[in-house]
Structures are given as C-alpha cells and as structure tokens.
Length: 155
Image (cartoon, rainbow, N blue to C red; front, side, top):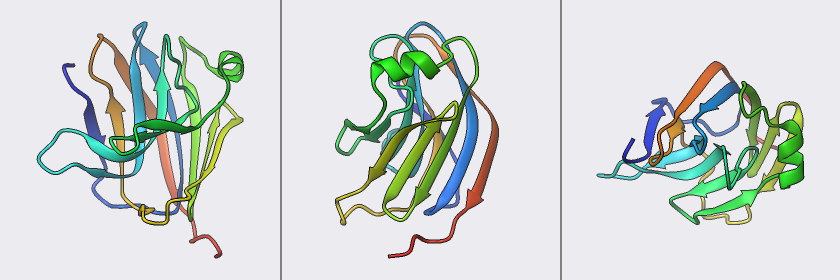
C-alpha cells in the first residue's frame, strides 16, 4: 500500500480493555492498533496512541507509539524481551488496558508497557483503529477482538 491505512470503529472510547490477536505477513511489515486517536481532517492519517507491531528492524512489537503527534516510542520492551516473546510467524496476543491517564500493554502474556501520560492537555478518549503501514508489501491480520469498558480511574 502506498500510504498508511486505518479501519476504525465509529464510537469513541476512553477507559477500556481491548484484547486481540495479530499476525504480520511480510519480512518488514509494520502495523498497529490506534487507541484514543483522531482522524486528521482532510488527511489519511490518524493522530494518537498506537499499540505498535513490526517485523524486521526496528522491531516495535509491544511498544506504545505516539502517531502523528510526538512521533516517538513512549514505552516498550527491550529487544531481548521482544525476541523472547514475539512469534514472528504466528499469532501474537495483545491486551491493551486504558484507564485514566494510564495505558498498559501485555504481549503474549508479558507486560511490555506501563505508561502514564504526563501531558494533561492530551485528551484521553478517541477512536480505535486497525492500521497497516504504507511501504513494503505486507499484510496485517487481526482476529478474536473483544472490547470491554472499564470504570474511570479513581483520581
């Protein structure tokens, strides 16, 4: 695909637990799950948090990335942990928990990110979207997707 593409839910979500399985096909495929995100008006991109996944180098499995905003990894596992837990040719199970300003990620049962947003100006609600990154040929497959709302975090 020549550019990033996103398949989004229409309702907005703030506090939730999202479970899914993902599989990437292609030697350098990059994809992810947008959470608490927004579509950029008159543009194909989204802005917000992305639960990242990629094959090859760099490897972003288990990382929390800030897409089209700060454009950097906010939290994630070491390459050694990634190598131990990622199934490059199989299905990988994610648990994504968002409550208040905290985002936690588990990949194949191992906690890979625990991030609390320090910037109070960033809203903590938005769309959920499945992404495939533009560039080299590849496929991102998703299955067994469940979403459960959570009560707001105690302040």
